[in-house]
Amino acid sequence: MATLHDLLAEHTALSEAAALHLQRLVAEWQLLADLSFADYVLAVRGADGQLVYVAQVRPNTASTLFQHDEVGHRVQNPASPQGDNPLVEAAYASGRIERDAAPVRFGDLLVHRIAVPVTFDGEVIAALGRAGDAGDALPSSPLESAYRAAAEALCRMVVDGVFPLDEANSLGLSTPRAGDGFIRLGADGRVVYASPNALSAVHRMGWTADLGSARLADVFAELLTDPFDAVDVGAMLDAAVGVDGSGRLPDPDLPLRMELDARRSSVLIRAVPLRAGEAADGAVLLIRDVTEVKRRDLALLSKDATIREIHHRVKNNLQSVSALLRLQARRSDNSETVVALNEAVQRVSSIALVHEMLSGSVDEVVDLDVVVDRLLPSLVDVWAPGGAGGVRVRRVSRLGVLPADLAMPLVQVLTEVLQNSIEHAFVGVTDTAELIVDGERDLRGLTVRVIDNGVGLPADFDLAASDRLGLQIVRTLVSGDLGGQIDMRPGPDGRGTVVSIRIPLH
Image (cartoon, rainbow, N blue to C red; front, side, top):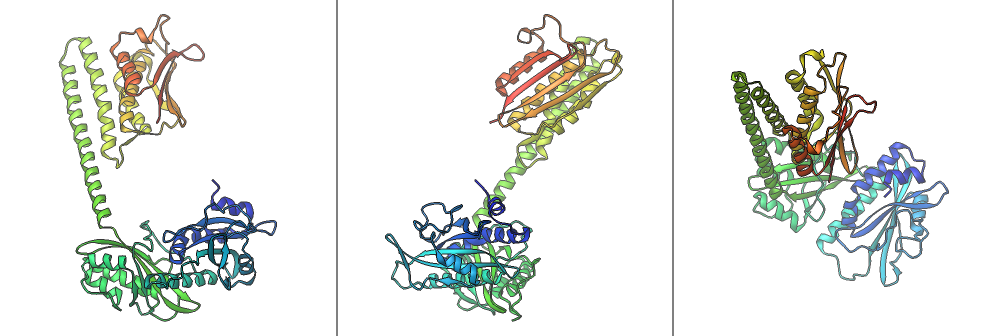
């Protein structure tokens, strides 16, 4: 599906700054749709001079009038309530909000339409078409009236080119919806209207009285556990409502979203300044009770810390086992026993290395590149034959990140393969010995190749029939734990060996 950026690039020659303004508007216009109880579409003028819809939003507070996707359609579409809409062209030309004198009937629907020009840097660059159900003859409730009044104020700000704001959100906080809790503030920072959900959220914070016409900054100051938060939220609300009377919008560096902790609950708030031309018109405050969400987040953090501590302790225990095996190997006079114990040390150490990676990660994933880069030098130090003049090892491509349940057996397989190559491939080799770890990854799986330039495989070598413990471990792990395949064959020039391990990624 084409993105808004793609559609703007396809249909218009807007500047990057103008396109960014429209992208910000689309990122914020769910609030407009919810407050208006109406569908919105965004129309821009194409290269052929015709208006085309490039974005669409449906309300969460009412039934949609758009049963079909309007994106990509021309404005001349009589079959749609928002389609053949002369108001959009009129608003584009006049730079003013255009309205139907009376609701328009489309089949069984009675629709009220308006069109709002989108202004940027003093120029109309797009138009919003709005369509809402006009069939309900009942008088509006206080909540509906407050919603619609705020929506009209925001539409006027769209015409003035000051909505949406380029606001700071360095913490990446999410946006509460109008249905979560809606409070309309006057230019003095006092509550003009609070929705039932907003009242419930404030009451859960510990406020026992009715909000009435209270100054909201004072209410929060009394409820919040952190006095610095009280100062910050007071400054935010004062800037949002424009208490200085200048009508200036808040500084772009001033956060307009905060997470507040009270004695009984936590809430997420967002202030949306309202302006009428050069005059302050108060603000809308959206509030969401996030107490349970935060409690679950803390529980997950505690669980994550426990899991990482377990990985750390397992790593320490495995390192102790490695040390004991290494000590036993040094005390043994039997060369075969020494070799077997050293192999066991490397196997245990490779598992410990994965646990060490997991103990420092917030996710149960392992970066294979880091593991291989740490594994190669230790294997060379232990197993490189003295007559080989040193073995040069390197990784030449990125293997990427794997889940722990795949990374653990794969690292064990790589340990066995690398150890086998270093120990046996370069016996009697007098020139430069080289070992390369290569790989490639696609949507279906990961292929890891271990390539050496050593003496190659014996003529009668059969991987399936080999009775070597290391190769038996490799076969079992690849076919069982990893569900993959392994192949060992001579190098492309007949020299050395190429071991290919292919595992599926689901």
